[in-house]
Image (cartoon, rainbow, N blue to C red; front, side, top):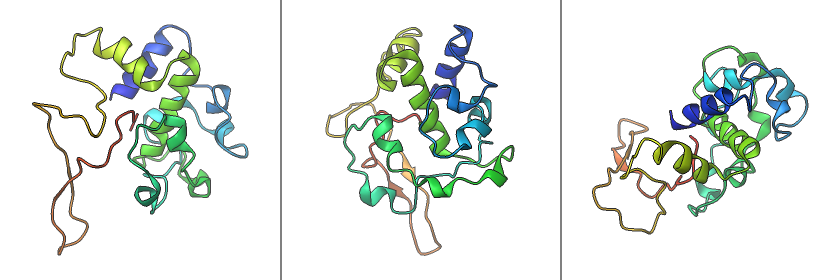
Length: 166
């Protein structure tokens, strides 16, 4: 939701147009796929992008405070599915791409843009992008859903997506 708010703020400032191709703002996507999808499609999870980067993402991801672009470098672009454009398919990758666009258009890091233009503007004093090893009192801890009937709920505190648009 925060990423969507940031994108709509940039649209309100006439910095982006939701209905032009993503390639207008970034050349990240290979081939001509960026010419086929719009920011609106990414916002609505209808951009033909997968849920996640690839199956072994978390074995490669270091958990450090990598930039949005660092995360995107881990995306296997062979997972793009042009047949899914305009079909709802929840996509964290799409929101990382939106975060990348926020960085390109605003000239700020995703984290800085969000903190200055959203958290500070509405005085969210206890909301921030935390670093993994910092102690945060009064913080909620998320959980990861069981993947099978023999599995169990797990804390996902150690999945650090501190500067994550997804």
